[in-house]
Every structure is written in structure tokens, then in C-alpha cells.
Image (cartoon, rainbow, N blue to C red; front, side):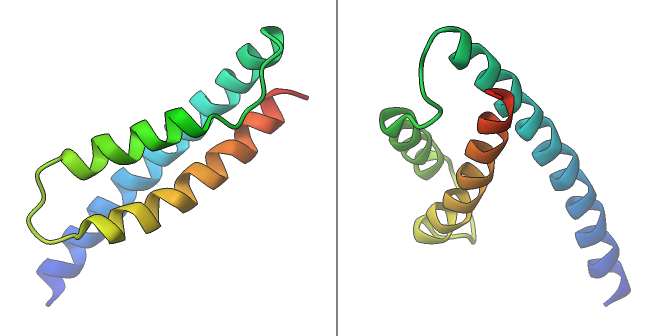
Length: 86
């Protein structure tokens, strides 16, 4: 059991690092969108992201689970984008 938990812990560390990087990019994108007079929300881009993710090969996680997870990631990314617009 410890072996699995340690592996999960390493994956969690990688996920947090990648999510932090994603949020930083969303913040910077918010600054860019502000300078271009655009809003943070882009429905077409979000649909594109969902479609790309669902097309990726997966062994265990289902498409509806990916969508649920990424809805939250994108929601939080929008918040960081809005902060970049201030």
C-alpha cells in the first residue's frame, strides 16, 4: 500500500506544479486580453480544450470525469485571468 501512496504523492506534487504554472499563464493571458480589450471568458476556446482532452488516449478515467475535472480547472483559471486584468 505504501508504494502506491508514495507514487500518488509524487503525482500530486507534479499536478500542483503544473496547475500553478497553468494559473500563472492564465494570469498573464488575462493581462494580454485586457490590453486587447477582450474578456476572459471564451466559450469556443473552452469547448476546444474539452474536445482535445476527450480525444487523448486514456486507460481508466472517463470523458465525463475529465470534463468535470477541467470545468473546475478552467473556472479557477478564469479567476486568475480576471486577476491579471486588474
